[in-house]
Amino acid sequence: MEFIADTTVLIDLWRFRDKPSRIADLAEKVGGASLIVPWITQAEFSRGALFKGVSLPTLADFYSNFLLLALDQNTVDRYCELWVELARRGKAPDYPDLWIAAVASACRTPLITRNPKHFEQIPALDVVGYTLRTP
Image 1 (tube, one colour):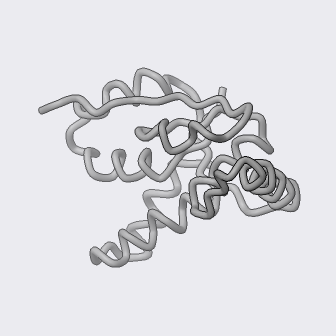
Image 2 (image 1 turned 90 degrees about the horizontal axis):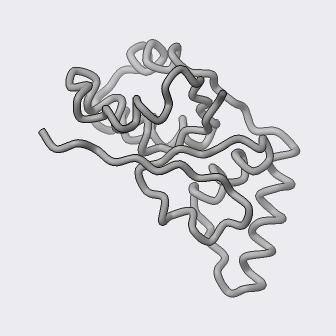
């Protein structure tokens, strides 16, 4: 099984890498599944990490644990279809979450996130939410 990773997943895996009990719910839901990191998730996470002083080699090492997914025409088409559908309903988001949703939708792969509400308006999207455990 595979999951498309929202940026919250990478943030939490990075932030709590030395405190696995905090991400136990995420680990339980992912189990032995592969985490697929789309280009937009990688860009969002890298932007913040670089701003905080994380080096590119350190990021490359972190990303070696995931399957990285490049942008493709199928995703571009799905993004445009979703945007038009949502715009016609007066709910057209124009932010990275729509790109992440488009990847999951185009791949027909569940999306895992700590913020499922960000994806509520996306039609026919399989979203798996998780929570962080308190210390």
